[in-house]
Image (cartoon, rainbow, N blue to C red; front, side, top):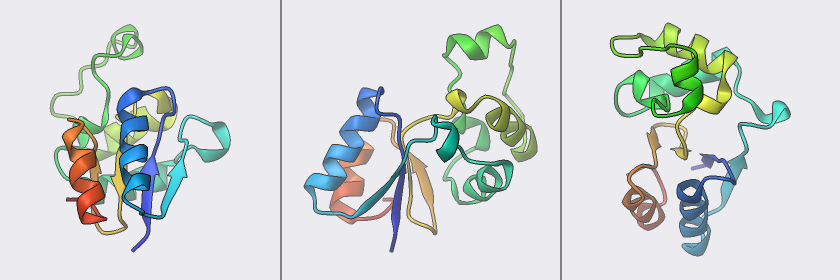
Length: 123
């Protein structure tokens, strides 16, 4: 099973998740989704939404200043609306997200990273 971590190295929660996974000996593909070369395109975001546990709008960082500046109101949005927002504004993607190819989960609260490290997959 391949583990992919959608990672922001400037986010302490994301760094914690990567540290825990690596300390447990897991081989993790790190995708720094804010880098232009590593951004997720609309098709990848749509596929991720299909694997993501929880409501698709949970993938948006709603307490971000950019979210507020854009005047977004995500309650009730569907997958296509969330994909469109994230394709245009990748910094609004919640992080970290662990994707094991079958399921994906947002790594908040931090305790989820401990569960991931123990299980070697999305717990």
